[in-house]
Length: 440
Image 1 (tube, rainbow, N blue to C red):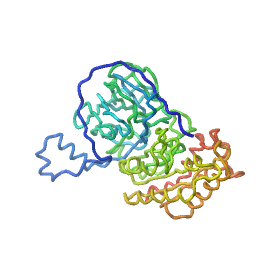
Image 2: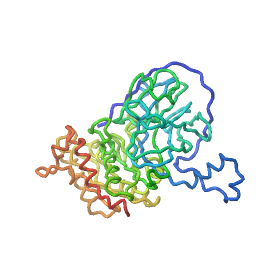
Image 3: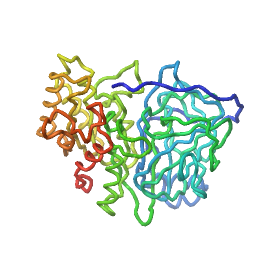
Image 4: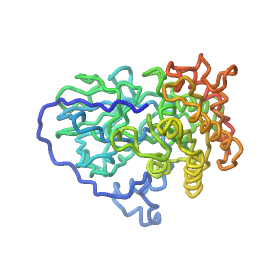
């Protein structure tokens, strides 16, 4: 079902110094190129040498969320002279970090007065001594043009695997929250008036359940001798987004997969996982009246998968919304879904990525279930298992279905709506992923 599109309006006017302007640029993550020869580098200023270092540094996404929006104008949250503190759960660790801030769904420039990163203690409080300032081209403020995104400069930051990060963004001017991830399943925080980006204890005016603007945290370097140089990006809908799991517990199946990689593969499992699921997302169709469901997955590939730092594998679970939103007695032809997936695989192979597909999970008992829709799902799964299009297949249907009635979720895995798994179901999904896929 489509998620509710909501936001809030609050804040106090404040004048702020004009930040540096970031011009429009192509949407890609690693936009720096290899620098000149060492002899020339020795003569460069320190800032230029730092840019050269970034060009050859190996980065991997340790956390990611897919941007969507904008919400309806009447329900768009507006903040003025306030600080956002957003919580992100790391997968892989490292010794340096950077963030990606997106204004890709905005229609006006986005001004960030200050940005910082720290380890989160609990709630909106920081772990003492871990707070670091983030710069953009060597400067504190940044203005991001509508339709674009920006990477921060790297900062030394000792990040353990599975740590909670607190990313603080100060918004000095009146700011409409038009680019966000709607289903965070993680509390974030909005301050009272003022720049509290460096405050250990944020004066919280309210909490939010979305991730505005923040779309990726990257790591490089080693933590405890281990360095993450590769990442998995998971492309999907609400089942990848974690709908039905417990909030503030990081029990989405990609979170649980990240934990398995680290705990079961040892050195080989220090791999980042970026979750690019969006609740109510479809493979083939956009919903202009509900843009918080995201652009169709085929259009999201370049931004949400290929541009993920260090991405080596794409895991795809998408198509159930194409089925359930199509007519109940004359649903989408399975050939259309297959053609869309073939395009995704072609895109992945063109970028040198290993493409892993997944079977669609059972949904009998859901309000949108019909026999005709079920036939499309069954036909699609038969193709997924035997078609040979993907490099590998994960059988999520087999992991979740009730052995006594295979068109239904197992009761112990059902969140209650007969479509979305609960936390135990997401654990079963993570367990169904063969870890050998990520050692190839």
